[in-house]
Amino acid sequence: MALTGLEIYKLLPQTNCKECSFPTCLAFAMKLAAKQAELKACPYVSEESKAKLEAASAPPIRLVEIAGDDGKLAVGNETVLFRHEKTFFHRPGLFLRVKDSLPAEEIKKQVAAADAFKADYVGIPLTLDGYAIEAASGDPAAFAGAVKAVRAASKKPLILLTSKPDVAKAWLEAASGTRPLLHAADASNWEAMAEVAKAAKVPLVARAETLDDLATLTQSLTKAGLEDLVLDPGVKGPKDSLEKLTTLRRLAIKKNFRPLGFPIITFPGAGGKADDVLLAAEHIAKYAGFIVLDTFDPASLYGLLVLRQNIYTDPQKPIQVQPGMYEINNPKDDSPVLVTTNFSITYFAIANEVEGSGWPAWLVVTDAEGMSVLTAWAAGKFDSERIAKAVKTVGVEGKVKHRKVIIPGHVAVLSGELEGDLPGWTIMVGPREAVDIGAFLKAMWVN
Image (tube, rainbow, N blue to C red; front, side, top):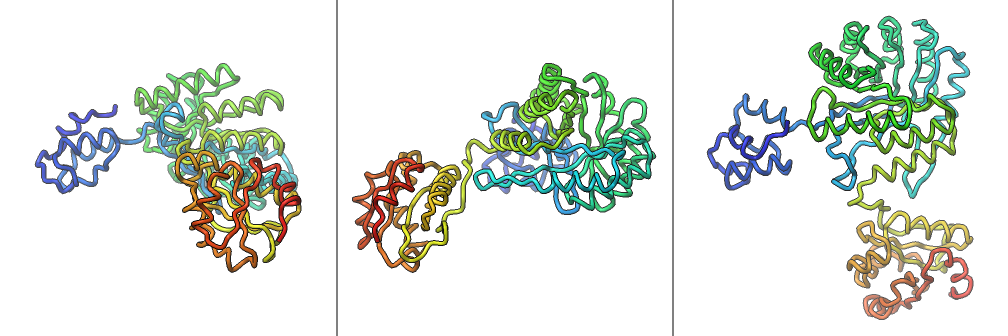
């Protein structure tokens, strides 16, 4: 359980030495309780107290990391039930199931097609996170061959699906050099699977039908020396998923129940294709860490990835693009210069409209702390001073022979002030909506 400030204070040296940068040990204890300070700031805390304090301050859900040949995925470490309470930190991984009963060339073909999927969402690349290889044949050699085939076509992280220790060993040898997730240990095989996972130093999934059995199993595995665990509660549908996954999250976050304080893996593909997608969407929202899909469909995967991106974007940190000057349609020295903010959706709305219109243009993106035009203007983050500074900083004068700049129609009120901050420049007021930029340039741009 989390300790209160007074409970933490009793474990501190109580010298009020101020070396932690706080006036008293009590003040430091209160900051520790609020997770606004780190224990290492105190140089005199005893080893016994340090062990107790570190155990109490550990995240309620353990961070588990897996790695492929050139990529990693970390899940867990969440501290809240709802994003608006703070934020979600580690987005769940989406994996595609591949069965070892398929020929190696067919496996490579399937994986290569899925691995090639990449979508651009307001400047953020969206891709599949990895592959879950199932030992459907039960043959260690076939399983090892499937792992090698997948690795030949992709460098992404892997999940190994087998409950047989001998098959798991063959699989892990074929996955040497990576850190896959091993699925799964249950009441009948946990000791043997624990030995395999410990020897390979990989995280292990604990699988049970009830939460009581799951807690008992994780306690046995942690006593056996395994720390990186993942939970498989065997959910089967929307109602069962919502009840079990929410209960697991509440027990970990609200009750700090350590035996169930681990990330969760789910398999939403038990039903048809539509059920697969809908259930996966529910698992993204509440509260899976690894999600294994049975089918690869680019349209469905795109929807799931966008949903995940929206949920796991920090609401206090809007999606931003790098401030600077961007070239659209190979602009020249007589091309128009437009100004906007660095909110990603605003930037891509304007860039796409300009590109689609065929007009060559320079787009000056001003640092407005990731806010849209009207929001930034109202907050004082998109004013004439910032626009003038951006125009001067990015070197517009050296790129164009004219002295005209187009500002968004929503901030037409800034035109007079901007003329003072950019002497010698003509300030043009553009349209209020991005969709009208092409028509505006056709009608108004005369160099």
